[in-house]
Image (cartoon, rainbow, N blue to C red):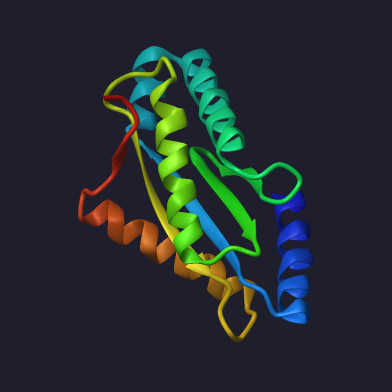
Length: 146
């Protein structure tokens, strides 16, 4: 999280200074706790690593960045990208994640947020978090497997 906070601060300053968009995707793996509890922590670790690999396959190298935010949550930073491009990245993440050997009941919810005009990083994270929980509440999670 320390590196994420450093990178987020750098990218937000750069985005404001150069007047370009910055978007964040906050992702939560749905059903992960049950899998971790029923199949064990080794399987849980394998799933986290596989999902992280799917994230890294879905973003631009040397431009975008992905982080484990905590537990079963991940953050993707997309410098120079608006919400529409973030939605395309989500589609690529879903496609990459489908190729993984993971239990069918696992899916993910996400929230996409642009850097607000205020430049507040707290507002950016809060907005992405709120949007993710709206998706969860509506049970609109993305299914990883076919």
